[in-house]
Length: 260
Image 1: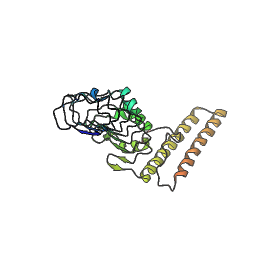
Image 2: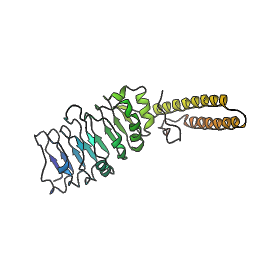
Image 3: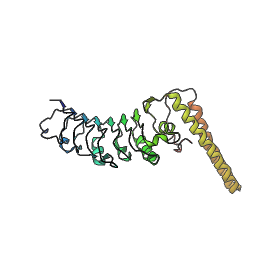
């Protein structure tokens, strides 16, 4: 048996699946399950659907190293309780996991997801990600070089100024954000704006330092600043005429900065 359907029941636990060595697809949506411990021996499992249960923590899946899709959206949890991720578990399944659906689970932090470097699709909509989560989100996106689709709709973070612009600049290969495609022209335009802002800030810093120092040190500082600005000009000029996605500021060794 390769596929098992056991959704829309009142299951509080799943037992005696150890003999299902070839099971690759398991559908357990809309039950009363509170943990995943009984699923840890399904070594061939590729797709696991646990949406609509009462699971508080993703754990116990360390042996599921063939798992490609994990669906845990819409967990029915007590007020103030959000779905958590065991770092050891995520690290173990990270090699092959390409789809994570964890919408509407009360998630407040994405830092544990940084190990999912091969993820291609992530649905984290309807959670409680705030403006202060932007830094951990940036770290996660930097590690997810293969991420193509990201959904963060209905999170408080979406109300942050320049939210979409910043997310696009953080992820070099993202093709769709919140169900809206990202074009090469949009990415190029944002990157050019980012570079111009950096140039203005460097020029202001140069003027400020020139006002504070003088002599030979002043001349050396001026030369260094001019060299840095020339490098930014070269990067900007190299992008002219291209419609394909461009490298992120991190790849070009530019300072990472949110669009203001």
